[in-house]
Length: 154
Image (cartoon, rainbow, N blue to C red; front, side, top):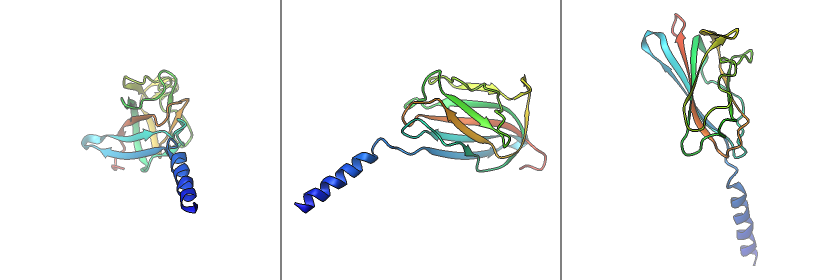
């Protein structure tokens, strides 16, 4: 009887973990010849659709000129509601809200903004990524931040 009870408790414990998937973030940094480079996050939100604001694993020095979000076709974010934020250390949104209400089927690109004008945004440090207003369990996408490296190749 004790053994059946223990198996039942174990079964309930295992079931309680199903559907409570943790978020995952994979970061890559691609440095290209000629100074054109990009950093990439592959994101999967938690079971409740949230993502903890996360810093890039590498510091970058350069001029950010564009950000692209590519939704995952199998578990995309909430359509036309989810916002992606890529910020610098001062919490400035590098594209000024250009990645708000992203599509869950079509890649979305936005140019970097300085004072509301499209131009390269200078960064010397870590970048941060955040997902807002998503309700999809384990929603996934790839976010690429394109930039021109500083002289000195950091």
